[in-house]
Structure formats: C-alpha cells, structure tokens
Length: 111
Image (cartoon, rainbow, N blue to C red; front, side, top):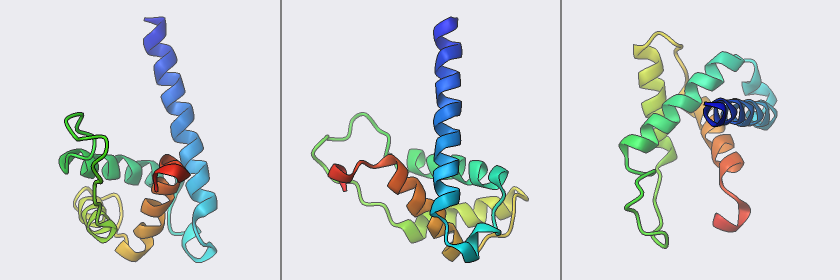
C-alpha cells in the first residue's frame, strides 16, 4: 500500500509542478482568465482527449509520429468545459494551456 500512496503523492507533486509551469507559461493577457482549479480540470480533459484518440496506446510503434491537431484539442476542451459547467473558454486562450502542457511533457529531443 505504501507504494500506491507514494505513487499518488508523486503524481500530485508532478501535477502541481505542471500547473505552476503553465501558470508561468501563460501570457499576461491570458493568466487571469484561468483559476488553478480550471487549469487542473483542463489538463484532465486534455488527457481524456489524448486517450480517446489513442495517443497513449501501447500498441503504437515507438518510431511512429502521432499528429495532434491543437485546434481540435482546444475545441474539444472548450465544448466539454461548457457542457460540464466548468467555464466558457475561448479555444484561442486554451491553446496556451495545451502548448504549455506539451512544453512541460515533451523533452526537447522529442519535438
């Protein structure tokens, strides 16, 4: 059980680091449009989108490139957030969070 608790703690720390990174990544005109809670929510929805599109599939060839349409991700997040009453976000603003998520998670050598 200690391993599970430790994994959960590490996940929470990683998530907090990512949210802090994204808050610093956002341009000043966009920063005030998102609360920390909304950023956590948006990151969860981004992961949901990637999961639905098979980005996380283990069957994918390591050498194959996965194309992700950031505009499509932004539209998906905006629609889901509105449907779930989490906010009425402009997809253009969401692109900054999506790009920040990408910058945080993809090492420079994989871009």
